[in-house]
Image (cartoon, rainbow, N blue to C red; front, side, top):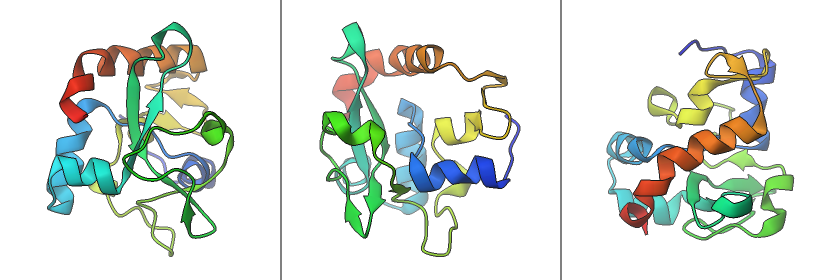
Length: 143
């Protein structure tokens, strides 16, 4: 995947952190030298898919706003969560990604300056379907 560090691409880290795919959990946990369960409880939130796939939940870094979590790590986010801006739990006070080498899949696949996901135009419906397909079979792994 192509990478970019321009302001539009990095601004997502300050507003709406990217979702993980199941394989990201082990990579990030190993990088932080913690277990997957600790990563889920201490850093990640569960985001229900929209519509008929609402029983599928994605994992994503928790958002912080004014030094408080918008939803507690380990919890399922409330309905208003998606509309609230907040910085990624992995973004340092100096604006550096603490897990850049193993960043979440959506962070690596999204290019804000081109408004693309995996090199194609970013369409919320298509991106949502992508994550549903990745998480549908992995739900019980991370409960």
